[in-house]
Length: 560
Image (cartoon, rainbow, N blue to C red; front, side):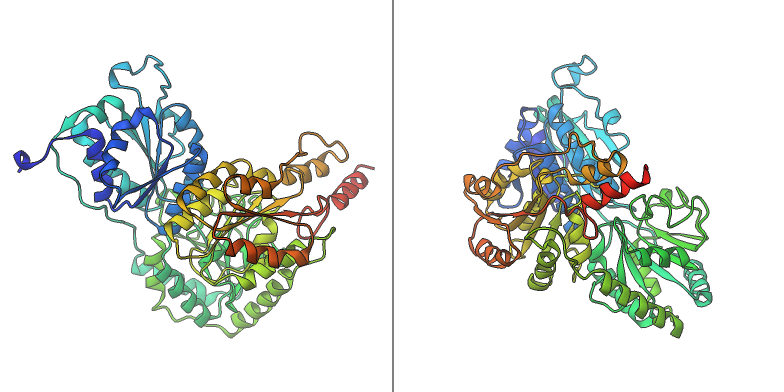
């Protein structure tokens, strides 16, 4: 059979291997270090679309968002050295968000290795703690093998990023090799004994709480779990930036367990006698800096379900550790019949607390930001995809927007700024028929705002709101708390964001009053262009519940 195979150069073998793995969309910034791959993709444009981005950080966010949205590995191409370092931010996001990614990086020829050649980096050392596996393909005939392993690794167990370095001589070399078929997704399943023990613990529980999070979920698993939870009467919360795993309109949904958590919900998590955690890592943001759940032995009876065996017992010693994929665990749960009338009463109270907590509150200035988020929550289609960046401005989104469907939230659980806009670009390219909305801060947006050029080039037409308060707000808030009145390094001088959008051929609006937002949004959505609405808010309004003035005053008083 080998004699019947066509001889191809390494770049063509790699491009064909991607198609064999089911890749339809790849993101990147072109580099001379992987020219043969670009040549290989030239003949595959009807099956494999390469999205040219303006900076590797934005491209890496797009690949991560694509992986998060679709469940298939997001594919990123960056050149060696500077390209690889720029792209690292999306890889770190993929690691902490448990998102499948495969990242291809150009590399110096093998004959130049270890000389600190032009742009040379040892990627095994650079990415060693940020990826599930870092490999380098030194022989052209092994490209299909390495690519197959990379895709299998990215989706297996706890999903995550994989790095493959591509020496130039490997890509220019030729070989006659066969493509490897599409990868399998392999995740563990719970044993019957695991399910029996879970049932026993729940039957004895008076104050159980279910917490969902992490990657590797499917729509069917989320819907099946919601049906089971509503039948049992259990209360459910979601971990940081995983609010779309459970319909927020459900009577059993009681809020997100993350930054700015409802104090009443925080207490409920602490008071739970059985804490059933499915998919979440129980990281710093979800546990309020490891205070909701004691380290290493929780006060709650912790049942921790996770697809990554290495995560079980990593921080917390569970009463019951279950190594299982989310879908596999939910499938086993569906036959479990547990119910307690007291659960439903407690859940109803917790739900009412959630409803009260998420009502917008008045804030300083002419723009009532919370009311605008609630308007968007009520107005956007149920399947609208909302991409959010990182910063205090996102607190209003977490608190006042109700997610109705699976994978309608794109946010970075590692809190990396600049995520929202490129994530929205990826979402619109992946699902062109869906409504996509991005919420960015002023400092947040300008970290990757050049990707509006990518949106314009590929017709990714969606509305982005840039919340402008002229501050690195999160840092300013902590600065005022720790060093009141000693402001330094947190003020911003911003451009006219509406004009910025128009400069790229987009649509721009500026809103300075609450009443002006709805018509501005309607015009932006109807423009048929990438649109930016600059929302100018009072810088004193630093969170949904407090102001900088209040924080400063309390800090001064505490020091008297």
